[in-house]
Structures are given as C-alpha cells and as structure tokens.
Length: 309
Image (cartoon, rainbow, N blue to C red; front, side, top):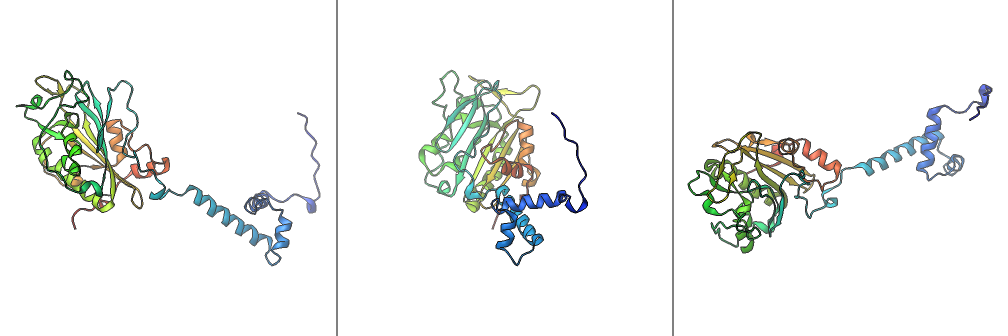
C-alpha cells in the first residue's frame, strides 16, 4: 500500500482533538446518527458541550440497562435445579421422579446428585411418612439396592431428597423411599445436623415461595468403606447441599457435612456454591444467566437465609 506524504495544515484548520471526535461520534450514535449541525439547530438554546454531555449520559444509561442483572421475573424457572453434565467416565443413570431428579452411579450404588424444586405447594402435608424403603423399579434386580443391604451395617438409610419434602403427594412420598435416593449416613448426622438443614430448607421455601436444592455424597480420594449383603454400597466421606432462591435478588448458599457425628450450628457447615463446586466437581445451576451465576455462586451471606420467627 502506498502512503501519501502528509502536509502540515495551518493551526486554524487543524482537525479537532481525539476527545472531541469521540464525543461527536457518541452524540451521533445517541441521536440516531443525526448530523451535529441539525441537532444544534433543533436545540438552538443548547450549546455543543451541553448537548454532548447529555448524549454521553444517555448512552451510559442505555449501556447500564443492557448489562443490568436480570430480575427474578426474567430468570428461567423450570429445570433450574439440574446440574451440568458430569465427566464422561462417571456412571450416571438419570431418573426423573415426581418431586426430584436423581443422577445415579451404578458403580458406587449411590446417587451422584439429587435435585429438586421445593415450593409452597409442596409444603402441604397430605400424606403420612411411609418408612417403607424400596428397590428402585427402574433398575434390574441384579443392580437394585435393597433395604437389607443396610442391615446391621451401623449406617442409617439417609434420604437425599427428604421424605418430609414429599408429603404433598402419595406417589412422591413412595418414590422418596426408593433406594436410589438413599446413602449410608451416620446416625447422629442423619437425625441431627442434616435433619436441621432439611428443616431450614422447608422454612426457606416458605419464606421465599420457591427454592432449588441439589445434594449428594462426597467421596474424597483414597480407599472407601463399603457395606451391603447383596450389593456393594460405597460409604460417603461427606455430603453436600446447595440452595438457590430467585425470589427478588437471586442468592445461593452451600453446605458441606462430614459423614460423622456432630452437633454444631449451621454456620459451621456453610460454604459458597463455588467452594462446593470445587470439592465435588459438579457445575450447579448452569441454566442461570452467566452474570447471575457468577455473582450468586461466588459468595454467601447466611443472614440472607434467616430461620425462626
């Protein structure tokens, strides 16, 4: 490409400085590409500096509106609880139930995760607890864990999606006792601190109107204990639970519980969702807009999740 020799122009005819050109371009964009001289004639009582300042302010407001965090009314609702895909080498049989969805690991005989929406309609108690644990009818008998696999093991049959979240419907109650929704859980944890978190989630659902929950077992590296008479069931090292609310300003919180005895306050187990993701390798709430997901998963404030009256 050939270049032309530049010739210095007289000072009186130099082009406007860079800032001026930028401001003129901004004004033109905001004014719908209207020529500046026409804009000035239309606003005879407004000098150029004022016109450009107003244009920049308008552009700034438009840009802020375009990048603002979506309100709850703009967020998707259906399926928000479902995590992202797991690594391809992870056994994952997805089973959809009336209340919850489970990703089941047929090698460990444990759920990878269990996810559900809890809303005020599902807090209505129409059914009594059945306490009848059942092999999952969607699994062949050779793979379906049975309740006697837990007999004399020293471990509770711990619900992931609680039976108390399913009292709104007889079928939902029955399915909550499928063994694909169950993990070996320390008795003290199952009946103590884990139950307190389940109770808290129901209270939060009542306050918020709707929350999204994902929970499941955690297996750290190393050798794991197993139980089972007919089927080998891996005993988890810990459990996770993450909770999302999109009511008002979206917010989320996570929890990690060791699979041991304990009697501690809720804030002893609290984490950000990002921290739970790093520990579990699971991508939670991927259906959220990226900018919302980044904010709600990066931090937590337990005071945003009050309990008691």
